[in-house]
Image (cartoon, rainbow over all chains, first blue to last red; front, top):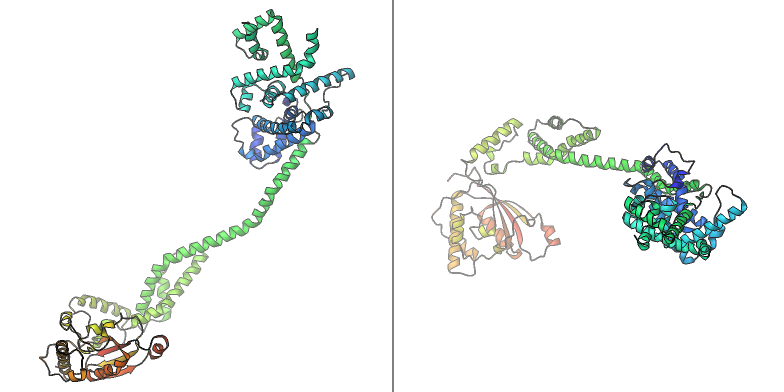
Length: 202
Length: 383
């Protein structure tokens, strides 16, 4: 699994592989876990953040994801990549949290106030427009069914391959494709009112 | 391929995950169909919007906080670890002690037969007056020569060496006691115990002679049921002859004879048989009187039957000692004693258990009387 956000991680040393870190960790070298955290924190955080749409919730949930992974590291047998295993934990936590937030209907309220800007600094007008677009995309993602949001985020945001998505969600590749098609259509429908209303009017 | 068919492939078409033929057909249709081209473009735009979502940095110090929590989680096991480490020494010590104890018990049990053999050897040795306690210990330590395993085993061996010496004493007493078969022939009993070798040899000889010798007669223990007279002080009769006496009319509660050893005797008599001929006559007389009383008289009168005419003297073996037990009702004790005195020479009389009887048993309980009948005095004239 090679998520694109992971490739932007500059701080993590690549000298030691995930598998080696896991082995060290399973032998009791807790410091090895820090390497894994630093290597995967951004990927996991962004996935969780896009699933939840709330920065603080995402930070808290991501922390729980890593702690769960640490506690369960003894059960990791290396049958899949560590990143796949970690993604699965993250998606479970995020989905549960998303349902809780949906119940409380707090997501939309907090979304606009909590998203920080980490993009390269553009001009003020461009920044405002991009931010507005992102907010709409995030709202659209939040309105999707969790399974649809998950498959879109994995495939389109994290650039995870069909096969890895299938492995991660434990569904056949064909199901991934059909689910992705359905999810993209649903997202397009969600975004249509904002992006394409003017075009259709024209 | 129509618009509906193409629409189902848009997602795969944009991901370029269709096979070449399908990709070509979809692409051809999309280029030709403005509606499908617009739909495809919108969908590609959606994908691009999601893909262009900025990757946010996690909060500052996220990894440190995670690791801080991880080490908190780690703290709890470390407390257990600390506890385990602090207890591990004592647990190891306890385990070691238990294992040593088990090993010691195992070795002790393993040595038990050896110890018993040694005890027997020592017992035989102690029968010889020349064998001293030091010799016994020396012999025991010679026979016990397993290689010392460790200090514990050595300690155990010491106890094993000391043990038999203690056990030996009662066994030595038993071994030094006269063999029972010798009661009938006191002349065979060595007055001064021979050394061990001589003892063993004499035993071997006894075993060889055992087939030739008649059965052991000395400790023939009878109860009142088997007695030939009213109290049966004469030599015991063969069982077949005994059966002929029935039905008996015995005034005493002889039928209630208890198994030997059930309780302690109330009275003990040591008596000596009188001259052989007289005893035979008396015995025959008592048997005759028993037969008569069985036929004629239901209420026995022992005094009347006592001076019965002498019958034909049957050859009787009476050169042995005998111990008999009798159950006698307390009211008949005086009659019993009188008859005993009439039949034999009472050499000693003791009331060893009289106190116990009054204390622990009902007063109307039959008296258990032990009579040790010694053979006639050797100085008496032979038959």
